[in-house]
Length: 583
Image (cartoon, rainbow, N blue to C red):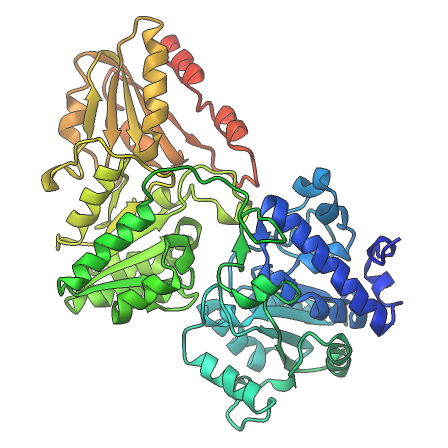
């Protein structure tokens, strides 16, 4: 029997000796590697926070004492000792737990969290609620040093230090890394604090008003226990700063911290990936080469990212090649959008690359700082569309959110040629900001690239009658399959690709009125507020019937794609069936 077999709740951890806790830490690391190697997940962050997790649960009394994990990149050990052990060692149970905290799984989790810089704000709300109700318990916010660059983290720290005046503990997990390297002046102070064993006169946290404790070996469970015991039941805000090793216990993750922050399934012994990504030309490569060529020609291009360069294929070598033209603002998407607007105003051509779900944090900056000022910045939206991702990383909301903001041109390429033509056009036009949904899949060539004056126009792949299929971006493949299905019922449908969802190609739409009875829209996003509703509104006073297909307005969580498509009737047979009923 292993030690983990004896741990059914944090109460069992409290009974262990320091030696047993160290042995338990190694068993937990085996569980992290086992799960991640088979289904993928966050490797480095979780391996580095095992001892701190054990010490937290040894000292504090969860769930009475509230532990809030930032991003929850480091919650795997917490899950194992709060009754979810099988989710790491039994492959049949992997789907029963998420890679993030989730109160539907356990009373020891308080929020569904998958985005960064939120823990201090959320924990401060729990602390204030506790104080208003006259309760007595500890509230602990766990935040990685990379997350400190986010605006919400700084807002939360600023508020809690001066406004709470009661028990509030912030555990800073300082492993000297964000997803990639850290960026920003705050990290100079963290470095100074590490180098002086926490004794530096300049102390960011103390300047805000926190008491401060430093633990140089943040992977020493005995020292961690002592530090947490010293702040337990404190009556004022305090920061416990831990110097930890990201990827601890797995040599590859310790050595190559960036690629092992998160990984697809891999072989533990060699580290080789066990997933076949297929063959074809990567849009990451095409995008990088295109931007780098412009920079080499002397164009004032600024490539902007917000702490996640690997998402876009910007590995360390490429970042170095881009030189001063590469700007990583840290995990601060709001700042990235505002800065991009100003870069455009200053005469440069900013290209901000962002994950679709992270774009959600930037609505005010998109509207006010960028669109209202009509500055011609370019935003490339990655990992968008319908997916089997967890609820915190869905890419189906970006079109409805951003395409309805005035002055923003939102483009949706379906092919490599369309994408490259749109990227080229967006970087030369001066009318206003342009957003481009970067296709997810590896794409192949062979299509004719649209001219500059065609990048916003609807393109007809085939013209027929009775039914018109309008496919937004990557939904072109589904539209083609639907057209083939309709041919079995002697319906020769019109097939068109929608390249722009922020405005309508009215000339193309008018041409559909004569020979068509049904217009079908297909989009890889939520239907509510999406492109299809614009079409339904446009044809509202005509004889045409409009069917809109896309995603429901809901948070799905790791829902398999085939199930997602079936539940939204996004199958050729279902779409054809609905169309035939209206003919």
